[in-house]
Length: 119
Image (cartoon, rainbow, N blue to C red; front, side, top):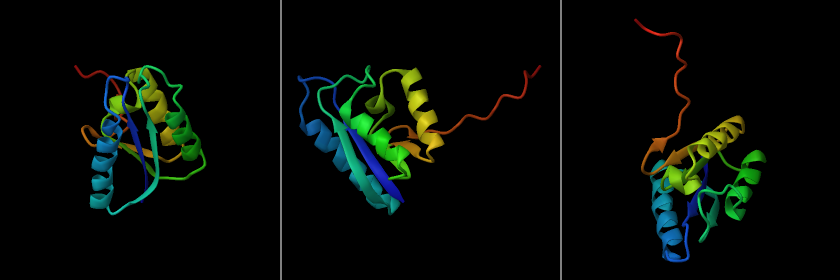
């Protein structure tokens, strides 16, 4: 399995080591999964409230090209702080055949459809 790692920290008051720590934890998980790292993407001192981040944009371009099967990140808030943006990322990546897995929340999945209201 080809896995892309994404790491981010949001402010200049945080340590650049945060990216290294997130990446190291993800690399350990890649090893446990028996996968290979297809790319590492990161954004330093950029807010998760914005989707206009070079590392995230590069990750999405590579996903569109079929460069990997999974995005692994420490937590969903590393991808975005906005739930609507996370949903959009999930929808696009799912269209490209790419799963999102986080160390803290696990794999994002499509919820089962609600077929009707139970009485």
